[in-house]
Image: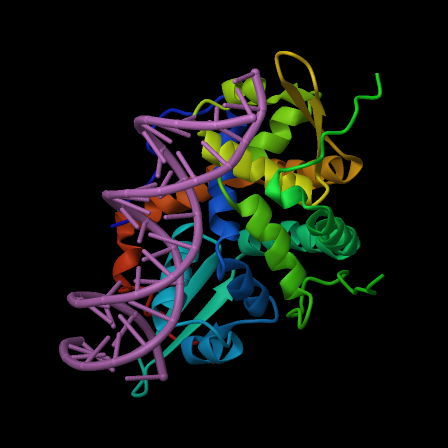
Length: 139
Length: 139
DNA sequence: CCGTATCCGGGCAGATACTG
DNA sequence: CAGTATCTGCCCGGATACGG
């Protein structure tokens, strides 16, 4: 497993693009951000995590946690007790990523109305269908 | 405007998560960021865009551009000339998103080595197998 | 309680061919 | 040149059942 899907050397950008893609692939999926933000309040055990994130399945929760642990964004601590207990917590690195995500959230909060407005008027004028919009060049 | 309290990195977002998901769904996919960053230098026509982003197909380029146009992040200008010419350009909104992405890139550039290191040692110690780390509870 | 293993359906993305 | 249309594979992600 852990198969990468980067098929070929399609990088045209500066070398940074690979790094950006990596972090984007991580936070781009549906659950990672939710897990991280949920853990921001403090360490939680598996079942609490599952309860705190309504839509998530065990499969996705486990997978996401493994990925995050592998990248050093969260820690996993298993207590050898009679009822097994496992706690997950954010690392400093994880918190720094949370900060970045929070910045994104700030952008979203600031501009989401504008985006929604543009989207609405685009659909009204039929931009999505790629017809019309043959505007006369102002030059 | 929605009043946010994003000052502290210690809370789970109740309702705002939808906005975050929206913008994350947009920049999370493989091509959007590449297109936006390519356009950051200035307006480009369709074929130039395609040439500047090696791996992209017409389908994905068109789709991405449509989505970006719909959300008001890029403008599309068609010139009714004998050889058809269409130019795409970033809007101010698009540039502000580019700024946010650039911030992400900065994070990636700063921490990618750390992440890569963690990933390597995780695979070496077999973290994926979820063993070890049976530390004595400190409480 | 904490996961892993397996089956399976839906959507996304690549390649190709065609139009204005 | 600038797209649209269609077919297809395949990966993601949900549900379920089972192991430690």
